[in-house]
Length: 213
Image 1 (cartoon, rainbow, N blue to C red):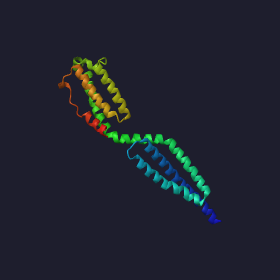
Image 2 (cartoon, rainbow, N blue to C red):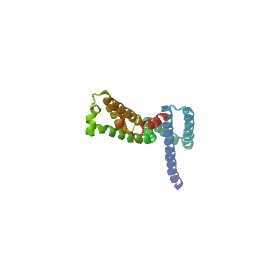
Image 3 (cartoon, rainbow, N blue to C red):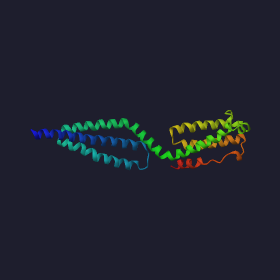
Image 4 (tube, one colour):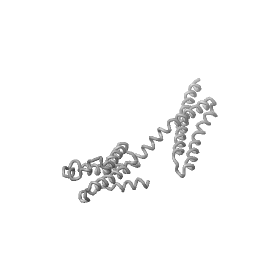
């Protein structure tokens, strides 16, 4: 009797262990397959094959070994695999979107931080025409949104602000367009080059870097 009572907990413990291994392997395999199907890398077929092979190496023993020892345990593990696969399939879009967002923020973070510095410089440069009475009187067109060039600048400013709030990967490009829009507005308003401060940073630098990625 003691031997039987000791065997039952060990059998249950093994079933729980195999269930955890199987559920994790099935879920990871589903996530990886959906990730490969979502992306279009040139080497995706090879990566997909090896990832499927790696998943099968774990999933097959996790199903077969308990099933040989106990058919009822095998059926239970088949149910675990099915539930795990279905749950992973249904949740994979949200998980992959979260992962891609984190990856993009990690990659685009330095570019966006550089763009934020240039963004502030451009806004400060434009604000002079409202805060400096002499400049406001000399170049009123830069505060007149009825002027096409000024309206384009305001539109570019709103776009840059919205992308900055989301820390979007397109933010550096938006800042580049914002700087170009201010240059056009100043030219249309007749601001001489001597009154235009040279920017500390060049938006084209980080924009070009983003385009080459």
